[in-house]
Length: 308
Image 1 (tube, rainbow, N blue to C red):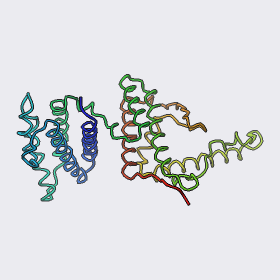
Image 2: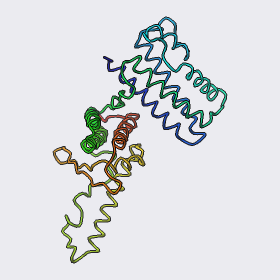
Image 3: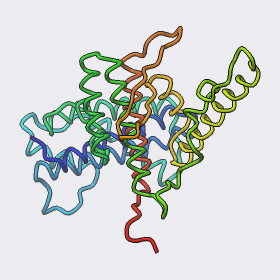
Image 4: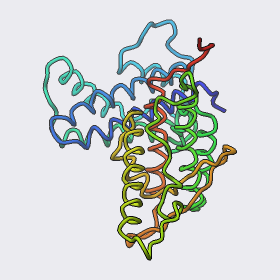
């Protein structure tokens, strides 16, 4: 059974790997940055493996390719795999970092495949779990959001798409509310407050008779919706969250309304002609919440003490 520290470090390694995969899919020459990120992820994995198997303490900090011999002494099946692939990988990294030699797009694709095989083959060999079972959810610090993401992942395994999306949407709302709640100003107002809610300011709630004032009712509703969308967009952007990914996330997840008692009301959405979300869409939403959590955690703070 892996301890919590090992699990969190594996989760961070997988996060770096996923970042590198995204970088590798960018156009040239931007995709070249993936070589450095892949290499960092692999080297962190080897360092963690040596600590986990308790080898190499008396030899200082090993060089990249020395880890294979060090780890082999503790592995019943011999050396970690992909050594020859990693030799080429390491050379490409040295060429890029120290000599400015950019790899080709075909090389990038080959290195991505090599890195993927490295993690998929060596994670169960060393840590006795599949690489696919390493969960990035462990990187989420907000406990309520983390628990709902874990439930969402379990529901996704059971192919319960809508139930999983409910939990993902709830996790995102809890993540944002938790972040805001620890940054309230002197009079209890969030610095990410961009105007009062327009939820109950539609023409219907204002008692406008559509049979008598159609254009006025339409004007009120359009203004309400426009301001609400702008408030939402400004808030997401001010938090540093990727707005384009947020748009995709919102296309799949239900709307949430926080009630006066602090509970959340979930309103499921009707999907359009493209059909209901797939398991891949749900996984994207889970990954988006994790990525948003990491973004918020990069610069987090709490307002404490007495205001004067």
